Image 1 (spheres, rainbow, N blue to C red):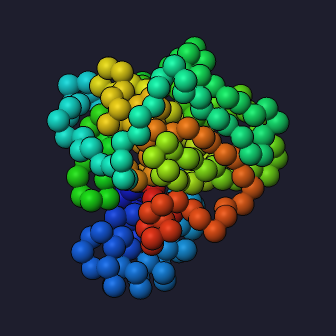
Image 2: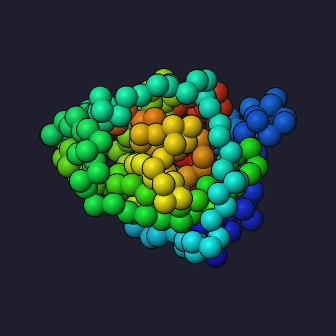
Amino acid sequence: MQRRDFLKAAGISSSGLILSSCGVPIFADIVGAVSEPFNQQVEELLFKPQTPVPEFAASQIEPGQLIVNTFGFTPEIDPTQFRLIIDGEVNQPLSLSLADIHKLPMTSMIIRHVCVEGWAAIVQWGGVRLRDLIQLAQPKSGVQYVYFQSADRYSESWDLRSCLHPQTLMAYQKNGQPLAIENGAPLRLASAIKLGYKQSKWVTRITLVNQLGRSRGYWEDQGYEWFAGL
């Protein structure tokens, strides 16, 4: 049985029981508090960090299906002044311009973007593999987690293994065109293995850490599942 099929059959998928946006906030909070640790353990056990998710054909792209969600506001970012900071438990902290990032090998993928609100869209994303950026920063031994900070003050955290998956990108292209500001330009997370709320837009800082702090991410701190795997 495939990982996604197992999670669905077991009723413990990211969109299954614990998200208060599904319309039963009191029940969701209770179930989430009880089930989330088990949910996370099972998802991490089933996760295959180097196994690609099957992709779609270009003819299957759904250009009108990707809904624009915003956390609060759309930030104004000058691409010429933009810098991606990579710091934390690394031997080589980085401050990369968009030109620096565009010089790195580009990866393109056509995947299904899945939102916890119940909609999905097949999208082409293009960008640099996150694992390539992490390797450039030379993480220290003991690193297990990665925090992402965005220009709109949105925050997220991931496990390192998911960051190193070959279909986890820092994307600057959507459907063959430069990424639009409403979709997270100049740089956003895009991944075949995580729900949409994990895929931060307008990312400006990536911080590698050994342990998670009290805050795990904007929605996670409000009760949403942390691992949020597909």
